[in-house]
Length: 171
Image (cartoon, rainbow, N blue to C red; front, top):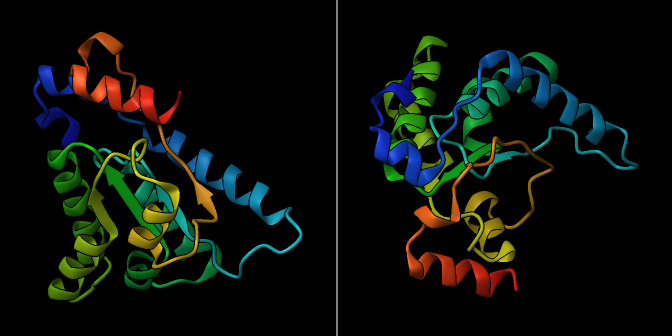
């Protein structure tokens, strides 16, 4: 529902294409199943959405950890689920979505607010060095599962400076 609050220019500029719940559930479950096949899967996987938009994958990740690993929703948001988005408004929506999920699960409002603030950050996942992103998101270790619906942005809609940065990073 948060995507409805974004104006057409923002959607175009950031390539905001929001993912229906039935798709987020399937992708999170499939990603976790693939991770479980590795030689040393973690007890509880850390899940990240590097282009989280309004937080659809984050909510699904919290619910997945709750139902499949017995992780309390507040613990999931505090320790196992992270999101990043380049658009500060989308970050606000994602935080609000997580706060509401935690509120509905009976969590203390102050704890829910703090967890949502720490779990979702504003940033450009494509331009942030991997080691820096790991420290910022999980305090060091990399996420075990990355799920996202990447933005669909035409090169022409990016500023010249942003294009130059992306070209330098991926040259």
